[in-house]
Length: 235
Image (cartoon, rainbow, N blue to C red):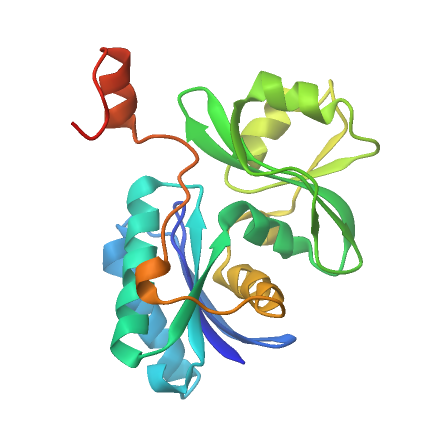
């Protein structure tokens, strides 16, 4: 199975083509432009480099969150359009699970961390023992103090990965045993989205474009502010 994969949950826009046991190609762009400007040109350049057309793919994979609300909508919207236009299926992958897949095949306790702002991080916990990472925690949005408390009960060293890993390392080192992932393995990656998607497709089916939805973990800022003023989201 050959998948075209997109990752737009944070500052880096990434496109990849993956198949079982192999990353055929990947392009990542962190140029300060919006993902709407970069992700489709990056994908087009990647496909040209791989001498591949969209019709050659068996389906599409995308990170569905948590992450930047705007970024997630851009990536998911792009995959919806690609899947609809080609008549192919698609699959959504947790951004945090995909980050843990940066360490597939290695042996670490992995804590993906993304800066959720407002004093919170998006996080989870996985254990990789030379194979695909096993989920230990569900995805959640918590404070760094809450993350410190949760990690204090974890045995051994914990590898921090993600765009919030450096922030968490500075806040947690000295109180819990944490390692900072090297730069080449630290950030979100469309190739890792593809690794996670292929793993899920061993037991799951692709879904239609209309079924693909984001997983924000919390309300958008505008709705949180409305609630704080006593209003009701959606009204």
